[in-house]
Image (tube, rainbow, N blue to C red; front, side, top):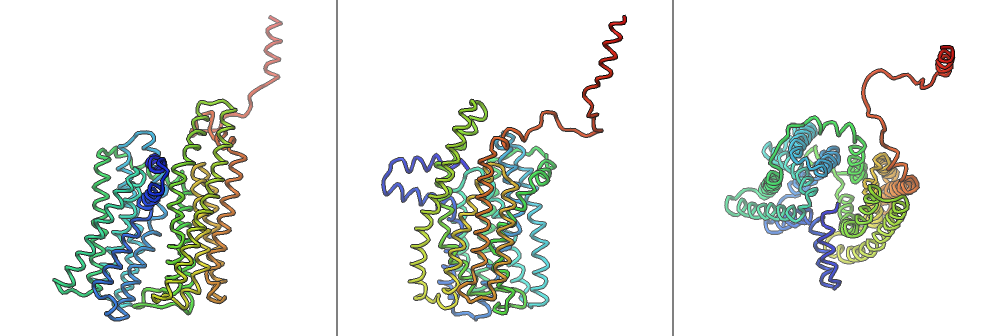
Length: 491
């Protein structure tokens, strides 16, 4: 993660209000800007194309299609991206740059295969059972696959620390989306819903194409070593579990409420609960700055202490190693506490603004009853994920997997219980799951602090591993030695 730390240090070194605001804006550009650009593009299209004047059924069909595209694109890419990110980081560290394109192509195939296995049956159901126009179904599937490839390509540019280009590519893609939708509606006289979905698909294709072109500019050679990529999935299978369960935990409480009698079914295919889904979106926006704060502070502060500890392990004395370890974990604790303090202030301000303003623009009733509990849950959730990132730093893959499992499982069970409570407590499952996950992650960090020397120095092997028969465990034969000495004396 040491990519933007130098840039942020230069920005904050001037120590003025303007530079601090600029540093925060820069952090937002490298973290959450792509998501906001997509949201802004969708809102502009809805405003200028007369989205509110079309039929309710068509509006819900479009909303559910976009919702499903984003949720299941994230879910289908989650099992692979963490392992592929680890592989790419390792080959960059070893300066074996010709191994990156094999990794990219293997990942593309795996993501597309899984996406098609999930998407094609749903699209067939949507067409034959839901009786949705086949061209609209095909556009939804294309948007889903295109977004999968966009998320996947973002992984490589993020590791290359090209965050600004990612945001720039999204800006171009969403600009194309808005302009194309205007052209289709007002020049070609195509329907609003069809134009919006088709334009969004084209925008995603533009973003993905620009990302792929940038990756090809960086990495031109191809070593052809594809099997090495697959071996990483066997070696780091815990990363598959961690990333998938974390992403699943983000939405599993929504899935639970989709199964209640409060849900809505669109075209006999899409299931949703509008009030709960909207409250979830608002709660996530309330705490989204946690990612910005975490990246900026970790890049600026913690990584330097982690680097010093690593250098002490390589060439320092025992006293240097111990001193660097204490400083590193002290800084880790400070970063977590600072994140909690800063995000608490931001979340409280955002919460008050939403509570006051949103009812005046139509967001009220059930949405605002569900929102407070979910906002608290997402606050704890983002803190928990920060602790998981620290576990990644210390290569505690088992700890991160257990954390993600406990978070997802408790969120699922707690949400089932919450369906029998009043709307104010609908989000208690997410609160419980995030709390359990945070406690598990913190407990693993404490264990890692106490046993870091064992973890660092005792995980290697003195002898090279190999295949074959097990050698004898007998290393000394006293009778044979005694007989040998007696024979020598006799001679």
